[in-house]
Structures are given as structure tokens and as C-alpha cells.
Length: 70
Image (cartoon, rainbow, N blue to C red; front, top):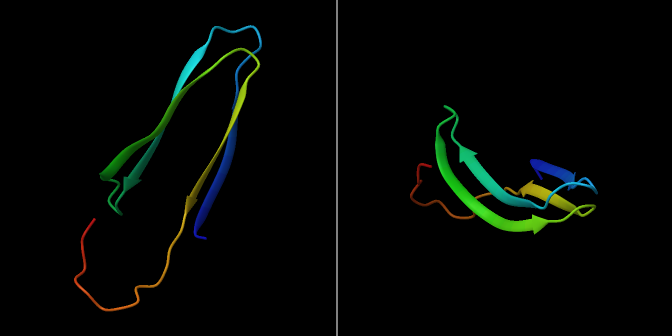
């Protein structure tokens, strides 16, 4: 697996509710954004915790075909 990132956010017990958005952005080799996707939205109350894992999987191309540019 070329990339795997795990992370956790924790809401302070005495804070106002939060709303969160999980966004994935893919950039090309020049740093240009080629795809943006909202994966999830949610809310958290005091003392709550959320864990997230981002994984990038890669596999070999099985048959030669037309190359698409992303």
C-alpha cells in the first residue's frame, strides 16, 4: 500500500458542538487539483471522538489499453 494515514479528532468535553467534513483532494505532479470529493459530514458533541483512515491502493494494469490523463 503506497500510502496509509490514520488520525483521530477529539472534541473538548466543555465545547460547543462541532460539524465536520471529510474531504479528499487528489493533485497531479504539478500540484494542480484534479479531483475533490466530500466523503462524509457529521457532528460531534463534547467528549466525542472520531477516527479516520486514508488509504491509497495501487495495482498493476492487467491489459494494455488507452491511457487516461488525470
